[in-house]
Amino acid sequence: QAQLVESGGGLVQPGGTLRLSCAASGSGFSRMTMGWYRQAPGKQRELVAVISSRGSTDYDDSVKGRFTISRDNAKNTVYLQMNSLKPEDTAVYYCNARLGIAIYWGQGTQVTVSS
Image 1 (tube, rainbow, N blue to C red):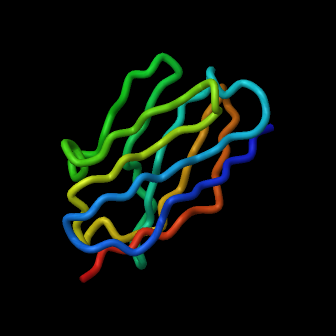
Image 2: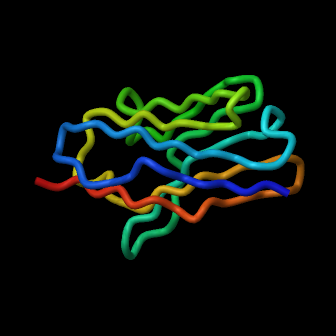
């Protein structure tokens, strides 16, 4: 069993930066595939970025070159560095963890990009 707690969301102007954190409790973090998803109002939840247990990463095309996912296994934490933010990045961002058939979700953190 794992619990995920996101932090770091907020209001930022277009072109600004934010760093989201997701702290995981429980065992097995280093073996988990970790991801960040987002859901904008009226839209389906979508995958933003994912990092495997070995550190390989993948990104949605809309964030490539602007967002970076990373993990610190010693701290049981995954990060999402978001640069050059755009209004269309506005959404609730969710942390996701997968280990075998088990899937865990955080409660979400709001990111609003607006002037």
